[in-house]
Length: 89
Image (cartoon, rainbow, N blue to C red; front, side):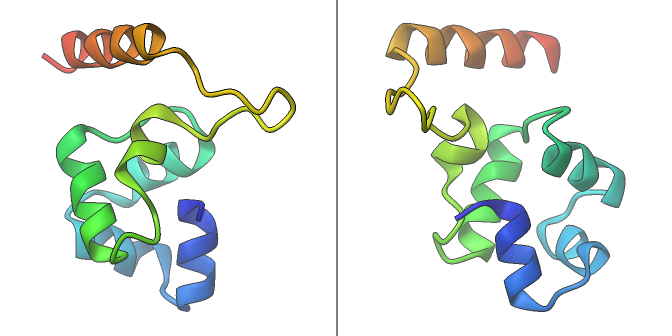
């Protein structure tokens, strides 16, 4: 399930959700708009808060390409993750 869909279905306000997982509403907005991806720690807190309905893997690596029905290669995903970790330092 997508994060935006979860928030909408839960009846929570975005601010309440952001507060519950320990991030700013600005950061939540950027995640929802695809401007940024959450840190591993934030992705883990979101997955735990949603009881697995929003997966950490989807938050970190993105949704698979529906048209091609392929996931990015493991090398690409690791490279993207390493790059994000470097940029967060």
